[in-house]
Length: 410
Image (cartoon, rainbow, N blue to C red; front, side):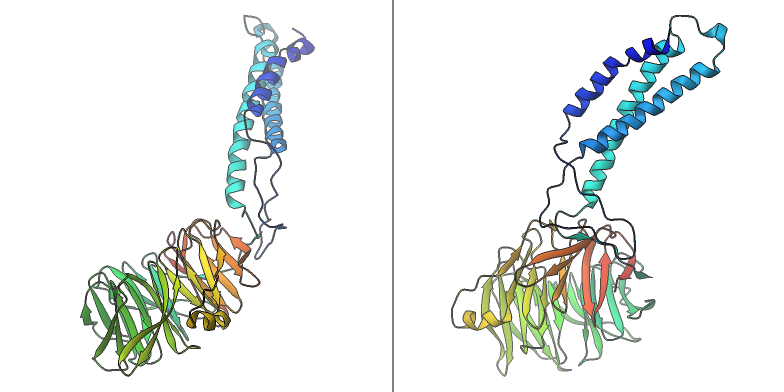
């Protein structure tokens, strides 16, 4: 059998490959991913629609077909002349069969690689990769706080202190015997660590010494200012001032999910399952003030000199200019800035100047511009499941559910 005759037998194979290509969603080409590097970018043009590239699938199919044909010709060239008889000769059977098999294999390999490329390409903004350093932890972090030269990390293995340096390293381990640790905060006025668990609020020295049980009840939110400590159990806020054992309480009548001290406003911001509330300390205890509606429970509250932002899980991210709070205080309605869709779930957020760093789980770590509206600048997929982000002095600390490390990315 001649080679041209064998090649004519490939016509049905080409028809099969064409039919397979026609069943795949290949309308349009996707943007090329960013190359590797320490901080690399890809051209971004707003919200982009990513599709499987038909040209790439055809290229992989052609490579597979060529590989199969090369194997067939290799078989023909090394087989002995006397053994080329029989029902299936090298060029008559092997060439069409191996060419078709290689093309189909290349097609589906290309399809899989396209799906991986699309999954790693952001829908909006640039793609980036950060140079980073990390400190080993005993377990994946569940919460973190930063104060001056120390990072305190909560995990299922207790509370671990990490040096906040260019090359972070793990230091002392605290509260190793506590279980169900949810949150942790530095208490500067008391010179200690406040630790919220599923059963009680505890306090432990930053250095050596045993933890002390402060109050019973599951802690759902925890924060510290320079002079006081605010914790929440269900719907009730508890304030401890200085080194006093006395506590002031306020019932917000809705489950509290996050608290943070606002040093610029001299007040607390408290997120619940349906609202964001400004709470002030007074001689009589705690007083609720400005109330802003939320579409979902606030997971974290981030503050900058000009804005207040709330991470809302599946509901995305919302922010309010501080300048508009005067209108809200006078009973007016202010429209928040809103970011939804990507990342698909906002776990945490924190400001570094005018830029908001956002922990988006499997979608990665995002940088979001705050003015004139919330807009994704770029995102990094180098973290398997980023759920924590904290900034301090221009440095960004990242906690990843998929890694037993605390990562410093800037």
